Image (cartoon, rainbow, N blue to C red; front, side):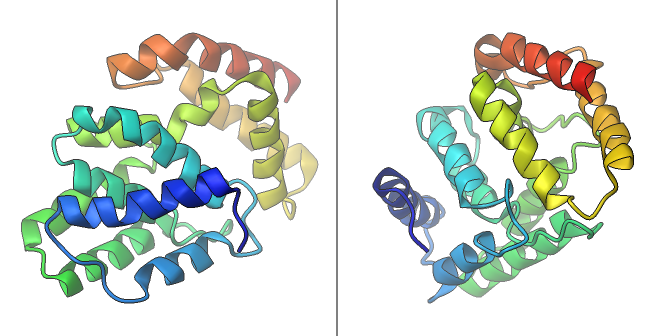
Length: 211
């Protein structure tokens, strides 16, 4: 798995920092297993690029997290299991994370908070927990990307669902993107609303009109 040097450096900083912040040591071989999972062939958007983009956003925003180690580790695991045809990717990813945390010696409270973070990335409700709001903002930051990156993201998602007929994909995709547009705010934290809300809405309007 060859990543750009800056991406490699980011991953190399982030992984030990997350565990050190929790006062733990990562289980042996876990980071290699995770990166192998993130590089699976069915992934086009939900791949290492997405993980790195989220972690790059996290670094200058660590001060916003109540439990920064938990948020950072949740980012590493949030799409660790990804089957485009699956309905329980978030729950299975959470299971993997909690198993790793239990192996490292965390208590049940930490595991439950991390599980709550994962389930917020289902995007079926706006989270109320501050750390969950922050995690979701990292996950949805792509909606406010520069137009070229947003177009690349849109194509990557289509590639993950290439088995879905075009007419059905366009209808379902329009429903998903329109759902974000109908929210009073796409982002749950002021930092991301200020920086990305306007561009995200413009990207989404263009995508919905073209769907």
